[in-house]
Length: 522
Image (cartoon, rainbow, N blue to C red):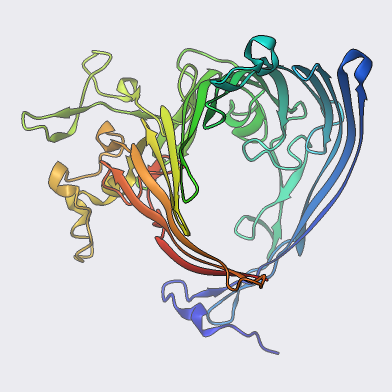
């Protein structure tokens, strides 16, 4: 027989190339059912609305393992097992009750119970209540005939939600289990190599992560609805946070364990304002604005917390095991943990010179400090649409203020040692080398943490509506042109100031997309 290996498998001379076939099959089954009953009772000017529901969700994925081959056709890795199955189930029951009095006072309550196969039988069920009260102030006699106020509504709510996904929680982490080692980790008995099994870390007490939210909001409208919006203030408290932490050696079969550890508080304000600036027969102009302030803080983190405890939240590329982001008590999640850079009289950073923050005369890890985070302090959004006769132009802008990013591109390539490799080959280097003149990498300098606040125009569009093509016909036509990712304004010089991880490295640029469209209706 023979083994077919594509020619592209030999494109790497050092490893003789390789060829690997992968296959994955997913099955997703679900069942949902609900029953609703509503009743108006005019004698007491009330309305009752009751809903009960059920949901069942079964998701599985089967990954098939095949032998991989070198470019020469020789087997490279033969899998121990031909396939692996991952499966999880979720069972849900919920009920909701809404009582409305005089179309002005609305009281609601919800209760749901969820059972996840990701937890043991003792911790499988989570119970999550919620309640809300709404007062339609606009329905009161003192505002009913107002010519200025067209809407006014107060909202108060409390609710609990559960999370079973967490940070790499897995489907079986509550079970004592074993995993097969790869072919690179075998025992030799005589002339035969045997794969062996190792115990995996587990937590039998793992349970639902729970978030409790308190919210107060106000909806408003003025000038017959031409000016309207809302304001919300909220407080969220998450307990039993599902996260992966370091644990003492010998206490489990791993040094990293996914478990319930940590609490986090979130406080914020959100507001929106919409305005119909012009509303005439041939001209309309709508404007919308929104803003949000959000502040997260970790209040508990480890099983045995101490003043200096922190958990790694992300490494960078370069060096060996360079951890830059940490979670710590009283800090924002994923805050940067770095040295404070010292600068010369010309404002240029001095290589390897950092401030002795604890003033002990020695520069070491005790002098690192928490400095900024990828979280923005404020987010803003703006949209507008202007229509003149058959022409419409619209655009969407948004801004983040106070978010910071680690420039991993400059910290890796903006050094003089990178210009000429050890093989005597010239390499491409970052332009930041002219700003630092660093000879070697200074990965943990706060110099590389840059303000990444930005203003982006995400979309701009132009539409021409021809309407009906003939007086007696039903055919309509609309022509449109659109551009996405129009421009970015930021003092950050990297590819993109917006990064989920807060680290700029191997970031694929967002494309600018132009679209022409023709819509014909019959």
